[in-house]
Image 1 (cartoon, rainbow, N blue to C red):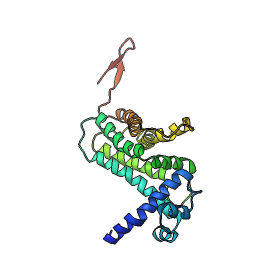
Image 2 (image 1 turned 30 degrees about the horizontal axis):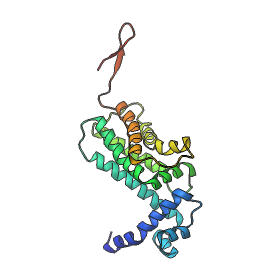
Image 3 (image 1 turned 135 degrees about the vertical axis):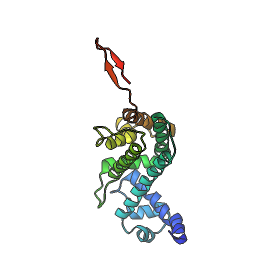
Image 4 (image 1 turned 180 degrees about the vertical axis):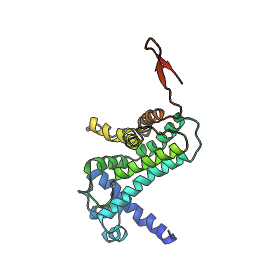
Length: 220
């Protein structure tokens, strides 16, 4: 990217993208116009179409930005050396939970991605998040942090549900509650789900057997 491109991004594209993220998350994709996005971004409609050509292309750019925020969070964790599954789950939850917890528009946008199912000529945000979970687990398998098992094909979806489930299902269970979940609360909920998955896939799982009376014994 050239210096002029960077300046343009800071003064135009980033503001447009952020405005689109906010409006898509609040109003939904179908109920948001490029004119409304331009107004919120404080730019002309022609500048929006100059940078993104269409609302569909702008949505793809928003999806990419949201996905990139989670990719960066995960990269920051897996780039360090960790000694236990608990540490991995804690740091992963903290990194992902920071994005979810401190950016309410991202939470709302993910919910919209689940329920709106906007038909555009590209994979959906949820599909791309699923691919990210798959790639993240693959990195942890290769690093020896987690082990593969017979349910490996299901694990990426499980990780997606455990990680982002609190964002979606909390809203379903409490649709009229104000969105007051703190960053710390979101991290705690995320960590709880990730710990369940990672302990299940730990490279040193606690295997149990039974004695002659049927009592469970630790056979590790």
